[in-house]
Length: 344
Image (cartoon, rainbow, N blue to C red):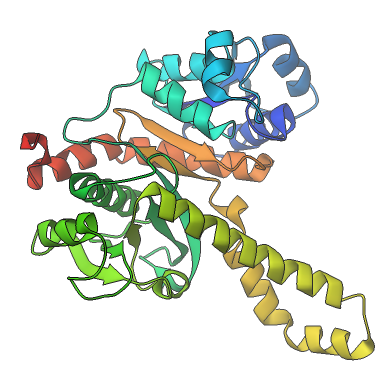
């Protein structure tokens, strides 16, 4: 049975989301055990209000959490026994197979850096994100593709981008079950000579290599879903991710406003109903729950800060799937194949 350490206090919805999500998962016929890390008394009290399988849940006491609005480094220094640090330590000690948190992103990254080791050959960690696409991906027909980095590392050099490509391909092959994920670099043109010096150098290193590298893609390829994994530095990735989230929210807001207006608007919305439902499904981040922080020697899934019970449950499932699929071993194999562990 795969064991997941869940930061029960992290996220905007706190225990309401994490306890309910873990409880719902415990009732499923699936071999996952969850360690709920947080204020033991409060977690126990919240569990009394829901139905759950006690053989699949364990409470681990912790003192507070990293405030979503405060500086994460100072919070971790001030709270050495906070939920994210205790959860990370459980994984580091081998008591759990993976870590899941919907809490402060900076706090999660720093806690992982403090408790885990960086993989040999990987110079920088990368925070990945899934984004909605027009095309479906892999045998599961996932309506999402993977982008990294989206915020862990602001700038990236050649070897950083190559490392991101290796990690993204490994994750996509396990979670989306794609045998040879199509990997591309995000640039300002599809030609090999386009982009920054780092992008051009990474392109030359990846082409003809063991990954299914298909070259460069432009911004317009992102929503089309022409590839399974898009690689970029954290600054660009974060800007793109926030833009995609903003566009999807605008579409939903426009539809909501239009529904309360004239009859013609309502008739138009009725005619577009199927398309709007499809758009909602495509942009529903609750369906996948979270995305990985890659580069450390343990599996880490960062759930959305606004995660509710359903998203938490799915994030834990994703973490278990990544751990069961030997994500770390796949990354190490990719690093060896590209001989990144031999580079300075």
